[in-house]
Image (cartoon, rainbow, N blue to C red; front, side, top):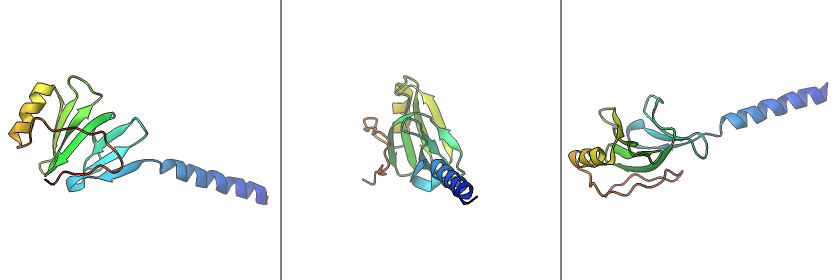
Length: 123
């Protein structure tokens, strides 16, 4: 009987550890990078709704904006305004660069892969 209880506790603990494998990096105004797996990376909002993803491959964050690309697609660019809670996605690179200029960011910013030590720009 003791071995059965021990086995059940082991299964419960193992399943709890497995459920907590997601990793989250805090961004501006409650937005977050959600690492669901090594390849599934999302951006979530302050209500924990996933707004961009699942394959965020490049990011840049400054002031109250998060910009980047999903799937390295020709129309995978996005702009998030974390104050207005607006998301513009499925943008071509040309339209994305126009959006960057409109919000005061350089059209020549460098996107970096999302990592667990991702930093918001303060320059």
